[in-house]
Each structure stands twice: as structure tokens, then as C-alpha cells.
Image 1 (spheres, rainbow, N blue to C red):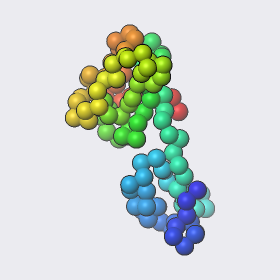
Image 2 (image 1 turned 180 degrees about the horizontal axis):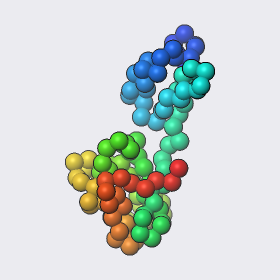
Image 3 (image 1 turned 90 degrees about the horizontal axis):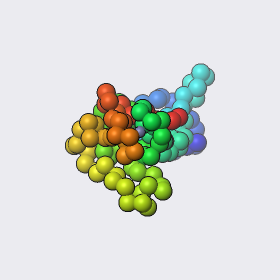
Length: 118
Ligand SMILES: [Zn+2]
């Protein structure tokens, strides 16, 4: 948990959000009593293929649920990476249509959204 520079909880959610602007791994947490702090996010999440249900990829720091998926948001996991399987490229300007399961060929983000395991 990260607190403000004074070592206290942030008084406003906006302040906490500004503090993590350049820290993609972190998320703001807010409690009912108004306590606002910052915690490290859960890190990479498994990207699940809607076709075969397998997970060959995990999310990267570029993963953003608010925007359409692109190749920079996911990366191939082991052991497939070591096997030399295609890692879909890393071009953020490429569309989500090129994101396909390396095993069964199903679109990983058929409507722009990746399925991730929480
Ligand atoms: Zn699949």
C-alpha cells in the first residue's frame, strides 16, 4: 500500500490516480470510509482463448480494458515462447483482428475485448 507524501491516505481519488499516472502496475483502492490508497495490481493475467479455453498468452503492462485489444497487450507464455511459436507481433497500431489462438485459430478478441482470467 502506498500513501501520500505525508504518509497518509489520499484525500481525493483524483490525487491518487494522478500519483499512479506513470505506474501501470498500480491501481487505486477506495474504501467505504473514504480511505484511498494505492496497491500494486495483480500483474500479468492469463488471456483465455474463447475457442479452446486454453491460455497461451498473458497480458502486458499495455493491457487496458477500456480500449480495443492490440498485439502489444499480450505476450506468449512459456513453454510456447521457447518453442519459437509466433508471438503475434507487438505493433499497437495493429487491430485486434490479428489476435488469434496459436493452437485452434479462434479470434482471441472477437469484439475487441480479450478474455482474461482474474
Ligand atoms: Zn484456442
